Image (cartoon, rainbow, N blue to C red; front, side, top):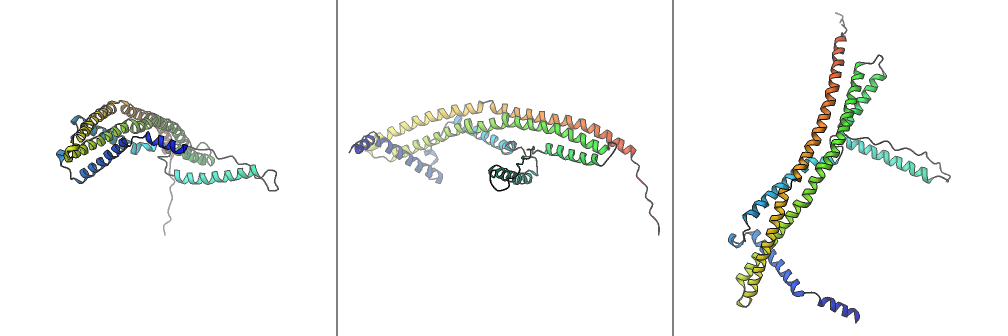
Amino acid sequence: MEGWNKISASLSSIDFSASANRFSKGFNSSIQATKERLGTVAPEEITELPQEYRDLEAQVDALKAAHLALLKITTVYETEAYDYPVAVNESIAELSTSIGVGINNFASSNLKGTNLPSPTPIAAPPQVHKTLPHALGRSATTAANVIKATTTGGDKLGKALGLYADGWEKIASARVEHDIAVRDNFLHPWQQTLATSINVAIKARQAVRSSRLELDAAKQTLKNASPAKQEQARLEVENAEDDLVQKTEVAITLMKTVLENPEPLKNLNELAKAQLAYFSAAAESLNSIQGEVEELSVAAEGEYSPATIEVPLH
């Protein structure tokens, strides 16, 4: 009995008339939206929103589209290997190695004190950067070592490959700094603007649309109301009008705030600044090594004297 009394008390605290009213409004709004979508509502029966609101709406849509357009490409900076074509193949091989090392070390730790042979622990291979600049530096170093291992007297090609490798190691370091700067100062803030302020303004517009549908549905109800229900229907229209005005003002304020926010411009400047720093470092490094490699190339051409091969005549 006590439990029933608690339930009764809880039920008595619920305003069923308010809940029913909200449900009715939502139902009428859905019907209104469906009619508009099907084109069965005359244009003059659809409440027109202020021109200022519609202009701001178009501008916010353009701002969102601009953010999405740039994010479509720049999100590649979230992954280090965006310019490294063999990253997938190497990742598969590294995963296989990692699993093998894990199994071996697990066995090494768990077979101690048993009659089974315990394998020697294996150190995991060092992680390497998967970028094109790092890969170029590593491949040039390998090529230089191969040449130097079979040549005496400091072969010019081996020396040139060493210089090329050193140059790309500097570029690779600049590339890592570039990616960190782009992610921290452009990409993440750019995504944050889209996820917060722009979406908040769009949600405010959705509230305006819902309010406008409620108003137009209330107007239809008033239009078809019986004399006994005319006064109540008129009050519903007035309340809906006040609600629409309030929500429209809020949406206008939020949209203006988004459009006047200087953050996207600052973010774009940070992107350009990071790219300029990276490409300047790359140009400086390549300019330095190219001059030295050219000297070695000219010297090699001056020393080159192709052997003459005589072909016997039959």
